[in-house]
Image (cartoon, rainbow, N blue to C red; front, side):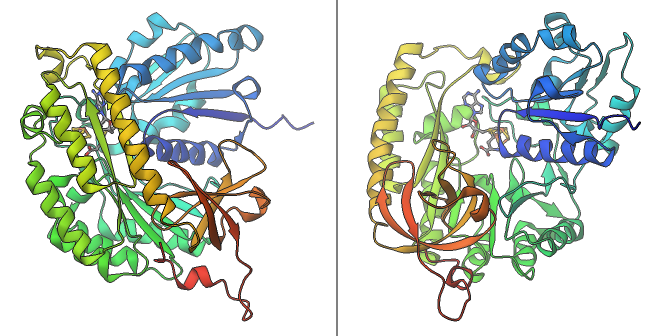
Length: 456
Ligand code: SAM
Ligand code: F3S
């Protein structure tokens, strides 16, 4: 009788880097013969892949650990591991708060996962959180399947900036850049496997360098991969966003007309206190240049409200920036002090209720802008790459336009559509998504969407 196949379950919180770390860990475990389990209860290895960017994000780990407390009682052999930024930051302290945890693994140590899992068992707990030893960095996304026709490509790890609010340089360490040829090679393998969309990943993705070659050189090479319909990259830092990058974006049909450029605040005084390294005038100049080259480019950003010392005047400047840029999408957060960052020691905190009110006001303004921008697309036909079911309804297929707008298509089966590009006529628009219907393929049998990836 053969032993039942061992199974793993990974729960991820946080940014795309974490989503890609999940993919890497899944791939390593599958290489050891593990299969994915549908829930923590059915798994032999449970990994909680965490985010510590805001306090709420970090607390989610302990809430989840509380929920799965009974797992060990039912099956003593289950391994529970904590990975990601909370693992890096808290290290052994996690065992004191959650004795059921067996393994704590930092983001730069993912390559050691198979050995640590194999060695697990008995009473010994393990912590592996070295930041300076680069031998266990895992660049390749591996082979574990991720439906949806899209793959991430990690091009750099860590961050050399010192934004005063941000914990990431402490949890992910100094920058390490992957050799350009290795990025292109993984991209070639992925497109060869039928992947239509690639997204280059890094905390400051456009600060990438490989010797004399800068980010725009890499972008230019990856954009030419045969079979690649869409290329994106995130997150760009405004201080490194060059005219060369804008020019490369404009010169390849495969590069999506979309840019996520986190501004954080519309007030120069606050940007200075955040140590972001640019002014609002610098930021707007770069966007103007990009819009001149790609007039229909869709922009998105991150905003923090309630940073220490943010006045009503500063906050109004942020609202003015939103009105001026007219982003397609804004990710806004109330400032959350992170222990060990420079801003955590700053005085003149903004009271919680003021930050909440500002956040609500900001979302009200942005929702109206996003809705107007989305409504302008009603009646147009756009190529959509489907990735699975919509968030609200498992029976409705969801995908994204080249501009990264979510499109839901009722009546289209998510399973069959996933991973395919289809032309979709937009019939309705909200602040956060569009609704559409599939336009039948053309008489020549070719999908028109594949030939016109820049239509939105
Ligand atoms: N690397 C990106 C960049 O260049 O801005 C962002 C990294 S961070 C993981 C993602 C977003 O979380 C930031 O852009 C910021 O808006 C938000 N964030 C980071 N630290 C925060 C904090 N202490 N409180 C609230 N939001 C925070
Ligand atoms: Fe954080 Fe600033 Fe780097 S937001 S990830 S320290 S660019």
